[in-house]
Image (cartoon, rainbow over all chains, first blue to last red; front, side, top):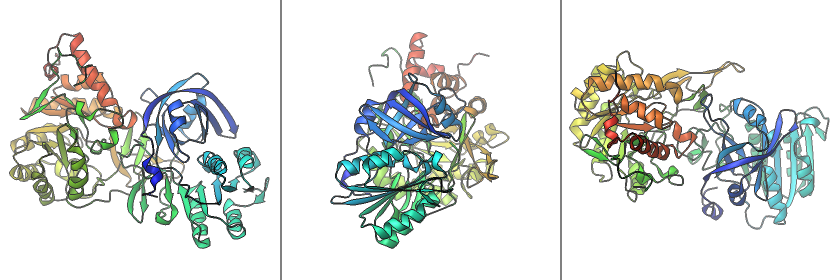
Length: 275
Length: 310
């Protein structure tokens, strides 16, 4: 979405010392950490991320990128799934612990002027960058419809947030324990047929985002995707996190993580490893 | 220079004819051309910016995944993705023209002719202060490390580059050799004004859940604190074997690491992977080196070079 006026007003990233306010398990293997991060809270835009330093020894060295899920005053919230060394370390952090992050980083969601109705499609932890977006859209008077999917009811995330701001929330679970049985892409297909939509925003497994992008394209609705890549620096220098697009290789950290789905050359050989 | 650096410590070092304000440089490929770091540090306090590798034509680099974290370090197989020398001049050098810092351009190629062609294009650019010839990248199929693991090709590329420029010529050495001192002597005999080392160590990692390599290219270069002892040993060996300045690097994260490399014989040092972890590392190390010297009444940081006692 290069060329949009919004990105030109983005605030430069900075190193910020932050303090853990709370860190709770919200579902099996999923945590929500609340950080006192005044500068980031004031400057972050929906869809941007922070690059968090979790270790200060040398056992593992790289930062970990996390979407900002929501902002509350001087605090930011991060939803994370415990998958590897970094997120296990994050899960052990307690209120009062300090760490540092670099943020806000990346190119977030674009909200085109004049839109009336947006569809947000989330798969699993893909809800993370969509929370702040749902709130922002609602605050701007844009009607929000949400399709969200999970393996089962217990692993369905942030349903309350979506139900608080969306006009309509459709749920899909693999086992049918909540909402429609099946994948969220099935729900998405029906919503694209049912509703008059101006834009689709999606985040989740790349295979899912690819299907949602194709469905939106078929319905003639512009679609934005939020892509995950392994990342070292997070500021555009290392070229670890490249995404193949029709405009050449782009960096997920500064040109993304949000991309116009129309330019992404989907490449399923990229399998995000555990972090 | 910042007021934090004491007036009583002379931080300048000489790389041949090039005088640098400090001995702290950026390792090629970890700092782009510096623009991405301008939000975090004062680039003008660096000894020099060593740019990402530049080739004659644009290079796509390797498929993804391109990195994997390993104990105390990381593997990468970026594959020298770069937009080519023309775009480098138009974008990176143009941007650097407003920054008062020496620029050392890292030059890459598949063939000797490509290295020479890149230098020829850069010779007309006044913003270039020196070249670092990359004969040690493990992530390209031809060229790169193939030139740096035997004396004859290393001599050939060094001689050809030497003939193309009178600017300072630094050759970046590969650690993936049996005797790095032998390669260092060969490139110095062929006209190198300095050597830099080490590039990454060839390594690999496998995901045991999927049975797949963690890097799409299967093998890649290991960097970070994990390689520091190996790098330090090689800097010491090379500094004892040649009489040109040595730029030491490999896992430097803090002041103590930088001092060790200088004591082992390095004239200057480069920070690499640590730039990814803390973008202010080069400033911390610069301040730390000045403080180290000040508290020990060492008048010049260059006095540390080769000062290890045995």
